[in-house]
Structure formats: C-alpha cells, structure tokens
Image (tube, rainbow, N blue to C red; front, top):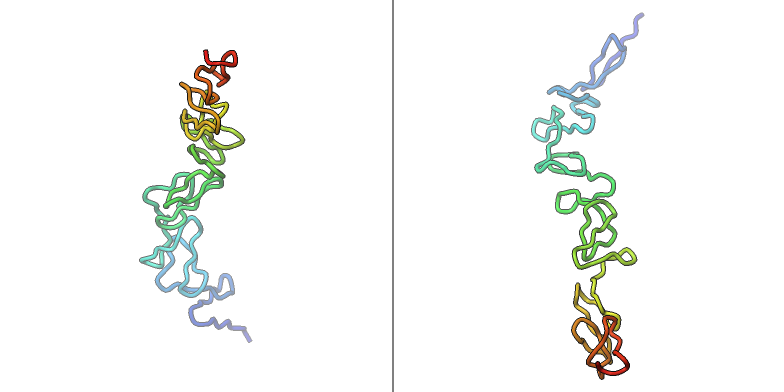
Amino acid sequence: MQKQTICCEGWQYGSETDTCSPQCNTGCRGGKCIKPDQCYCEPPAILDPVQKNACITPTCDPPCQNGECISNNICSCNEGYENVNGTCQPKCDSCINGECKVPFKCECFEGFTKNNGKCEPVCLGCDFGSCTAPNNCICIDGYKRNNSVCCPENCTMCDERGICLDGHCG
C-alpha cells in the first residue's frame, strides 16, 4: 500500500519534493510564498502596498542621503547619522554656535573657536571681562570698556591687555 500525503487548505503537494508547499493564489512576483497567500520579499524589496502579491524596490523622494530607503519614503540612517524631519543628518553631541557637517565633528561658526570641545565666542582684549558673543566683551565689576579692552574704572589709558599704563592714566 502506497502512502498518500494530504495537504491542508492553502498548501499543495509536490511530488518532486514529497512535501506540501504554501500556495499564493494571486502569485508572488519577485518574492517567495511562505504561507498560504503570504508573500515574503527579500530586503531591501518590500511588498507592494497596492497589489499585495508583488515585491517592489522601495522609493524615497527625495532619495536617502547617508542612509537606505527601507520603505516608501522612509529612510534608515547610516551609523553616525540620525533622522531629522525625514532626512539623515550627521550626529554631533553638542554643536552650539557651530555646524555638524560630518558625524561627531562640530565646525565652529566664524567668530567662534573650539575650547574644551565647545564653540566659544572670540574676543580680543577681554582679559577682565566675559566674552558673550564674537567681539562682545562685558567687563567685570570695577572695570569699564576703553576702546577694545577692559580697564580699571579709575584709569583712562590701558595697554592691549587692559593694564593701566605706568599705574596712572597715560
């Protein structure tokens, strides 16, 4: 007596493999039928959301820069990049007063310089003050602005370092 294999609904017997295989009644173009009427697409292909029986290559408009289009208009960003409003932008821990053009590297804007990993404003002659913006020095208490330096309040003539000349005003 010969054994006969009976397949469940949605499956079909294949004599060459002697097994039951899933059937996708509407087909599975570009993919593989893995369960009855369930098509699997090999990445990066995705199941067509309209036809449901065909694998398509996803498209992103605009195209993904620094990432991969994993589904229609969805980018998966490369390492070192993050999704910002639908585009993959380089990551920088803290890039205040600068621009992050490549991952983890902040380039300071003009008028700023890197100091301990941060972009700080540049002020010349701000030895007795606080540089709050490029070339904007706020003198500490007891000092006043004289040309481009902070001088003691009772002095009217300072050198380029903010030191009163000869102990008195020049």
